[in-house]
Image (cartoon, rainbow, N blue to C red; front, side):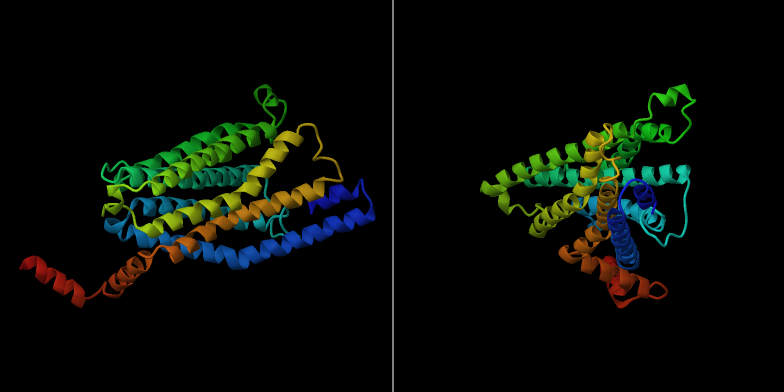
Length: 333
């Protein structure tokens, strides 16, 4: 690995052995992810999207947000094998990609991370709105679909400012406009603030409001328009899992922002450990692409019924099914 080659130039044989051991561990973890987590993530994300979109009538507000996160997870699934089979993550790398590919992967990764974090955040806030004002339809499926569209647009626009710093960090310093912007720490600081700090504060605020609502006993608690109680458990689990898996990655951005400029990380003694932690944290972030749909599949009790209806429709695609004939007769009568 590159970090080991650089590390060997300045340190001892013992430290070099430690670096190679870390590289071996990272290679094994990357291969385990590609063999186990990657196919699970692709299958469950596709299943989540297809099942919900084929049952649009029965979709609820949380379903729309989870479909949005599943699409972002598929984008992560697209990025993961390209990065994990590169020389940064494994010794047995398949290819070396250039700066243009690196920047493209970085854009897709950042956009996906923003979509996932803000979908989780807005799910928490909309859940509170649904609990507090169940008949206002402020958090309806129709409104949520438009919100998800704005999330993708906002993620692309938000990534643009960071993109300028990353692009200028990889091109020639002869360009005067970019020579003043070759600061990767600034790009990491932007992503850390917008992609993690803001959603974390918003989710914390939403949970405080939700807990306050749950403590208050009101006549609306028996309202049939309220969400299913299992949605609360799914919301709590999804928020916890997302922040547990994404926090290490954003913490490495924070470390790079604070210590990267003075050059502490570039010290030969700390560089291999930092790169190992950074790569493992990115592996955890990739893991959210399969953990979320798997959790949704297990905790959403309506998902099995939607899946069975989809399978029945596929089975009866070329011929009329008994339940379809009975439904038609009921409509005629």
